[in-house]
Structures are given as C-alpha cells and as structure tokens.
Length: 141
Image (cartoon, rainbow, N blue to C red; front, side, top):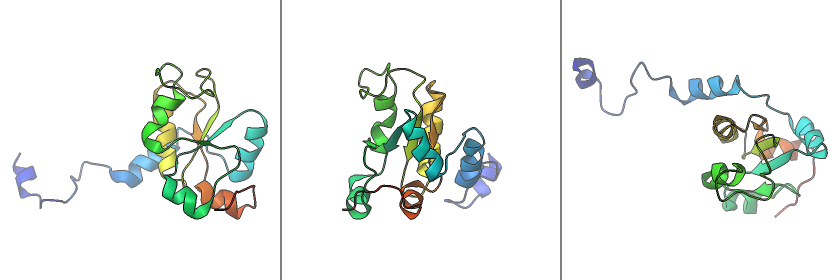
C-alpha cells in the first residue's frame, strides 16, 4: 500500500509487464503468417478477417475476399456458439487469419480468438501494409 502511495500518478506499476511484453508473450503462442503464407493459406480455405476500422480501409484499400469485421465485433462474429456468428464461423477448426493495419492489434485479437477455443486463429505479420507491400491483391480506395 505504501509503495502505491509513493508512485507518481500515471506511472506504471513496476510489476506490470506493459503492452510490449504482453504482445511478445502472445506472439509466442501464435503461428504468425507472412503475407505470402497467408495468401497461400487462403487458397487452402483459411479466412482472412480485416479488423481495421472503416476509415483505414477507406484510406488504404482492402484485400479482395477478406471478411470485414471490425475489432469490437470480432469474437462474436468468429465464435460459432456466440449467437451472432458470420457464415464462415462453421466450427472451432476454422483457420482464421486476423489482419489489422500493421500487425500489432491483430496478434492480440488472434490470441483472444484462441482463448475462445478457436485454436487455428493467427495473424498476419505486418498487417495490411505488409500485404500491400508484398504486391498481393488489393482493391484501392
């Protein structure tokens, strides 16, 4: 209690790992995919889920065929038992590839899907920006 009182308001608790450590830990549990690996996985039935908000999609473009599910709806749409799943959520064995803009939020989102029992969920290294830089199909705004 005394240590808490001595800490300057707004400074992190020294025992808290912070987002960088949390992200690194989450990534050890994922088999993350490069853009080319993700593209190949799509041909084998994986589902690419674009979790970027509309303003990012409008500014940068989209991946043709990607399922658009903004981050705040992801778990409900991908979990087949949620009562509000997308048509692609046919079971817990779906190979979900989560894509954000640069590959940070998608790691945390994929880990959240795994915590629901969706064991094949992973994410795209580098996100949409890496996909586009790799020269893979993109629909420009």
